[in-house]
Image (tube, rainbow, N blue to C red; front, side, top):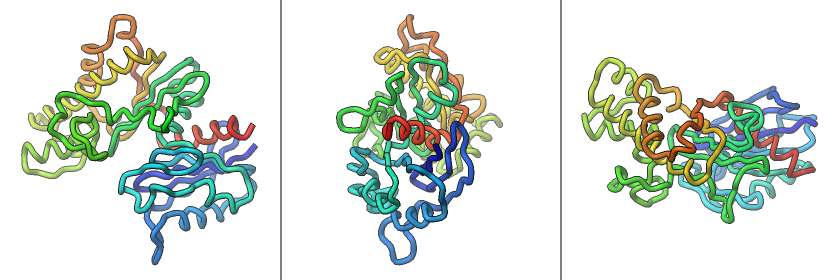
Length: 293
């Protein structure tokens, strides 16, 4: 079975053919409407038109997904909330399944990546924002309203004065995401730097950079410890651009986790993801195989 998998994110859309456990013919376009268009769906349909020989379409999409439709989304993708992804793609004449991108990412790591062989896993994506997914042998936990796994919107005391992308205050995302830590450094120093430069400054001994990375890592680890106490996953997978941060963020994440996790889950492995950008493509395809069975 060959599946056309599509990953719709805030900055790019990736598509590729998935056969067994590998991807091929991966193409990428920017997440932006075409000239004179208000939605990105025409661009996605044009991208789909570049492929042939697939039996179904599997979508991993940003936003809260229910029954193939985006029921809620931030303004990062223009006019995305309310989009009927499955309905728009029905013109292809093949079955279409749609899963939230973080749920697909977690499923990809569970089936093919760092969490394979474990009966349950918690995957956390830390980059521009913070997302997550709990996956058991029954598949990803989606929840009654499609929002299960929104780790970035768990409250933390250190974030009480920070405004989150969802409009609330006090969530972990504006404190511990890549964007949040870059903004924290700017508040401390008046300098706007990239995440990569923030890492480099910390390695060069910049105390403000060290403080930001260490504080953001510890706070997220603290949240993950609480989630482990609640969900008891067999393994915790950390992915996204921030997971590749060097000397200060990762040890602080582990320390924060140890400070919060109860004794029975304190030794739960925290590992880096293995699949990178292919995780949501593989996860969406894996979900489609069950969805269309």
